[in-house]
Structure formats: structure tokens, C-alpha cells
Length: 385
Image (cartoon, rainbow, N blue to C red):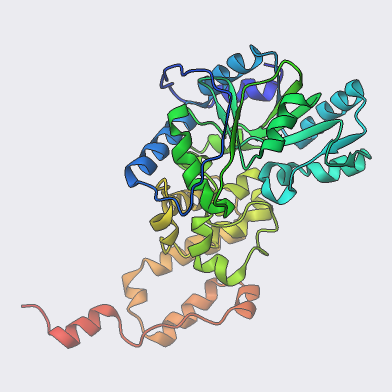
């Protein structure tokens, strides 16, 4: 390995689950997938496999790297975007790069995450349809064959992959599909996100005519992996179903996120990918209604992970002392039966003691029922003898 951060990452993963070796693949598939029906058993199978992979990520990535570099390809383990840019400058200098082909930036989360377009502009690299180098977003790494799964490709892309002098691929450490037999299930699920009837696919293992460089980016995902209850969030396939049904996201939009990551899963990962100080608010941008879990094709426990994130926030002293004191007092108030059974006036008065002034200005006060549930039950059904 050529990155110390990756060595640190290896120590964070748990026991390995072995996978059988698969056949070598290099193919193009143009099959149509109109409104694909996803078998629940297949979705469950994919979700289980992805969760096992996250728990076993070091071995899967090692296996992939070994098989990929054996085909005369190069892997860069990048801890963050600055690490990516330093290595790109070396490649540009050695290959005398003056222009580059960059796919639609909106279709690639990793390109936007690291700010690739702005970097190329800064380096005065011209963006053209046929540049000295071309960039590709890798949907999944396939350890069994040391291959790259590229969706939304065309025959033109296929020809460019085979004939261009230099290809540069990007992905993140969590984008690993452990079994090639799961490709079709995965492709059907992400068809929803891409809004496409055609999911053209290339499985690329390398070409003797090209210089192929793959960047596998960490960008604080190893920090996130230390939170074991939250690891399943890294298996999200970005299908977009949860965002479509989230009442909070549909009401307030993407503005509070101000990031490439939005939606229910972003509420979990953003404070770790960025900083808690900057994205503390998104942990509470959730009503725990559970609609996201109902539509998630791989059954991610999103509510449980959001609750675990909030608990981690409290236990790790990440919140400021005044906020911690307020939360502790508020919890004591809300879990005290005698106080909750008090009159509406007293409850409002007590509650306002724990609410900061800026919250009071921006939100209307909580409304309490005139009678507790216990009193209403007794009135309607009488006291139990």
C-alpha cells in the first residue's frame, strides 16, 4: 500500500468473511430495465452482502488491489482531496496533460465531493470531449475479478476506455460489491436514482493500450467506520427512494445540508465526513417517522442509526457544555411523570426554562393537551377496580 491512512484503516475492520473467486470479466451490456421490479429476497441478499463487506472491508480491498494491479493498472489510496490533487499533478506533469474529458459532474457524487472540476480549472486543464486524459466515476469495485463496474456508459465510452492513452477512475473505499452475481440486482436498484430506462454497463479490468489510474478515496470514512452501529450507512446504494418520501427534505429542501450529500442517510454520515460543529444540526433534521426505512430496498435501519448518532453525540462530549446541560435538564423534565401531569400552564413555564432564546424566536412554543392521556382514559373508561 502506498498510503499510511489506509494502513490505519486496516486496523478498524472486524473479522473477515471469505468469498469465492469469480471468473474474469470484460464486457458491455445494453439490456433495458424499464420500471424494474425488485424481488424482496434479492434486495435482502444484496443488503446482507454489503453489510458483511463493510465489516470486512480491509480484506475485500486488499483482494481487489491485488487482482487489479496484476493487470498492469495503478491504484492510489487517497486520504482526502488534497492527497488526490497532489497525485493528479504528478500524473499531469508526467503525461503532459493539457486537456481532459469529464463526464456530467452532476451524475457523480465523488467528483463533486472532492471538487474535481474546480481543481481542473485551477490547474488550467481544458475540458473537452476528447482530452489527453479522461475521468470516470466507478460505481463499484469487484474484488473477485479486480474489475471496475461502470454504469451509464455508452459504446462511445467503451471505445474511449479501450483506446485512450490515459484513463483516471475515482471511487471511495466503501464502494465494494463482493460478488459479481449481485451486479444485476444492484443495477436494477440504482436505475431508480438515474431515472433511466437503459442502464448500459461496462465491467472494466484494464487495457494494454492505456495507462489506467484508480483513486480510492477515504475522506474521513475510516473515522466513520469506528462507529460500529453506524457502519451500515456506508452500504447505501444512493437510489434516492428515501429522499423522495422524507417529509423533512420535501419541506425544507437541500439548503440546510449545503453539501453533495443530502437526505436521511446524509443526516448520519455528514457530521463524520465533515465536522460535528458544522453539521450538528442535520442529526436532528429527522422526525423518526420511518418512511425512509419503508422504501429502502436494502432495509437500512436508518432510524436506529440516527438515534445512535445522537447518543454518540451526547456520550462523546461533542456538544457544548451549555447545550449538554440543557439536553440533560430537558430529558429529566420530559421523563418525569409528575411534571408531565402538571397543568398546561406549569408545563409551558417549565419547558421554556430549557429552551434557548434563539429557538424561542424561530419556533412557536410547544402545545400541550389540557389533560394527560391517563386522565382522559380514566374519564372515558372509568378507574380500574
